[in-house]
Length: 124
Image (cartoon, one colour):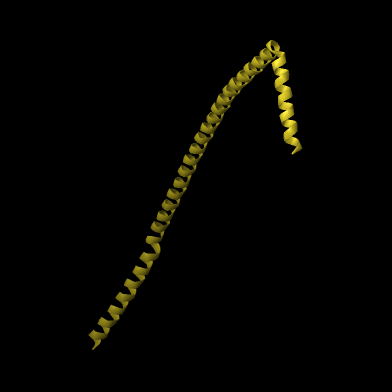
């Protein structure tokens, strides 16, 4: 019977030692590894955010430059069209002035006719 008790006592000690070893191995070994994993994960996330920020900044700068160039092109084209319209208006004004100089009575008659038409339309 003594051998069985010794055997049971030995097994209990052995189980206690195994449990302590498992607990200690879980506490001491994986925790630093987990810290390293968390640290590596945090660094990866930080790098990803920095890369994303850099890419967004680069695209925003490119978009801003393209909009600036586009606005300059529109302003340049608008200026060209405005010059064309101004030239045409100047031509029409010059033609009307030349016509009035060459045929003043026709212009006076047309002005009187338009005045009568406008006057009659306002009475009703």
